[in-house]
Amino acid sequence: MISYEHYKILHIVSILLFFMLATASFYIPQKSKVMATWIGTFAFLILLGGMGLMARLGIASAWPAWTIGKVVVWFLVVGGAHMIAKRVPNPARVGIAFLATCGIIAAALAIYKPGQ
Image (tube, rainbow, N blue to C red):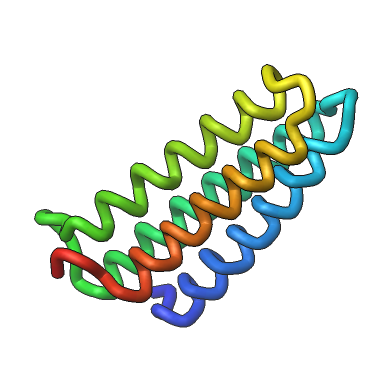
């Protein structure tokens, strides 16, 4: 059985690596499949770590509002970063602002846990 601390480390490290690669993808003109694969892998590990943390906190059937908000932010980040990197002519400025905003919202939801 994986402990709460291990899930937390997995979650935080995956977030850091996802944000680093997503930010790098905004600056690289030619997108590679290897980078996209790693970004997708870390996005999955963020979700896996978050769900593991929820299980260790005893959140099983009825999700509090803050967990629903975090999942919505996760979907926005994964889909939005991909769309910004592919469709915006100069994605660096918009992409970094988008990732920073979503990261701040997700961190605030995790720290303050509104609706609990």
